Length: 240
Ligand code: ADP
Ligand code: MG
Figure 1: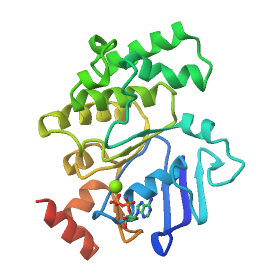
Figure 2: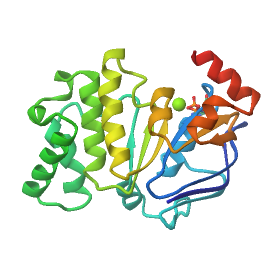
Figure 3: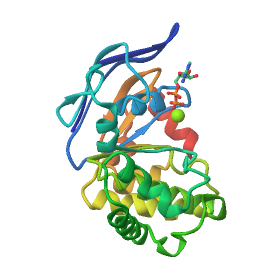
């Protein structure tokens, strides 16, 4: 579903992605971890071209996303993105946040979009908040709305960039639960997170990135029990 071939990216002189090779199969859940500044956000953002790349190729569902001819609206409909800071539209109600793209980008009619939004809100446990505005919701609730909004485009892939790092501790579980349900429904997911409990329980594979390079990837049981790379060992020690 996703394939990175020798991807490089520079921000001016800074070599942030230094030869990324990675494949994510359909239905697979890959957790990406690594030190702050190692390139995790940049890497995941290249998948739906929130960041461009300088060298290499990224293929998503058979399309070369870095090709200038790629239709970015179509790509972003297929690849949902959930941000650390939710990024809901503050002036729109919960339901309107969810229906905006299906109506604008896909041309869905409002009644059908509303119906779908309510079904998605039920799935994330927030049907009763459909007419609320983002500022009236807790962080955990806002993030669940953001996930519902991503799903409204019926994506084939969902990307998450530290979806729980901005949340108060008591709200992390409710968001991880929604993500776990989504993983169990068969969604292909790439998740940047430091929630190693989630990685252990839900990930098929953990990818460890350091200085823009994937230095280790393994199933979670292997990665946590016996990390090979010294930087990975150090990283895991710091989380304890
Ligand atoms: P991570 O998500 O692992 O913390 P990032 O991908 O955000 O790392 O950043 C990798 C490196 O690229 C960092 O040194 C960061 O400061 C730098 N960087 C990220 N975004 C930009 C940008 N838009 N312009 C310049 N440098 C950036
Ligand atoms: Mg980041």
